[in-house]
Amino acid sequence: MQIVVRLAIGGTILDIAGDIDLAHSPAMRKALLLEIKEKKTPKVFLNLEKVRYIDSSGIASLVEGLKASRDQGSRLILYGLSKTVREVMELSRLQKIFEIHDSEAQALDS
Amino acid sequence: MGVPVRGVRVTKNRSKGRGKAQPKSEMLVKLELQSNPEALCLVRATIERAAEVLHFRDTEARAIVRSVDEALANVIRHAYGGRAGHPIEMSCRKLQPGPQNSAQDGIEILLKDSGVPVKPSTLKGRPLGEVRPGGLGLHFIRQSMDEVEFSRKKGKNLLRMVKYLSPTPLAAASEGE
Image (cartoon, rainbow over all chains, first blue to last red; front, side):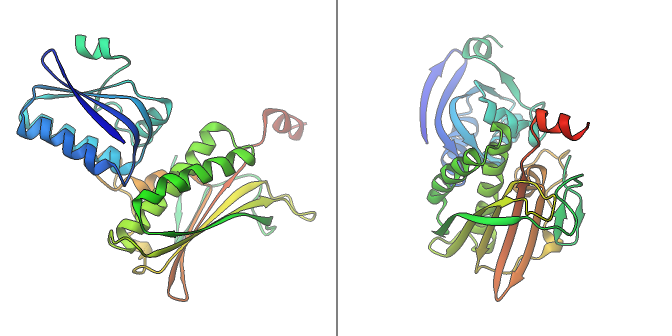
């Protein structure tokens, strides 16, 4: 899995590529919590366009990020979810609690 | 919907492929793994291909892959406490209807580990209404597979998961005639 950090208007974009599974979800969790809790970034955008697979540990990391962002009064915004990622979000019935957009443009405009 | 829980064996209500008649099975692949999270991507690729060979639909194939991945992750995290280098056996068999029964085609996956015993009473996923990390893996497995059975034999944890092939629309139509 690869994580690239980019600056965006009002926040930071984390481009995630590869599989978010038991082996790699700790790295995503660390990057996410660094932005939210330590850097106190007001908007953290998670670009999941190149994520092929996400497991329950990846979902748990996203939930932890969401809770941290709520505690900080910041926003965690997801976009570019593949069919596989959407399926897992729906299975966990968490798709409605996250702010999800189809594209980067829509996410940045939100 | 989730699979109803009946003791340690969990099955979905199905109109076919159930009852006393048991399908024949044919070994497709057997893997000896170590409790290393890096191995999970190899298993996912193997199971994805096996499901493809058995003509599962894409959504069903993804569900099977997800179940095996989550089950292995549970073995690594819970049975072996996150410690690497411990053995896990995985076998994958093709289920076929026998000449004397009406069982369906399907896939059977068996996982065997030597970790701490699984307590069936503790095998509860978290309620889905709760927004908190964790507790989703078992829920994914129960949602996805037709049969899920935990047991312990000769000091090893065994997990058996079965997914039957859904009838094709054409086959379903002719059965209804």
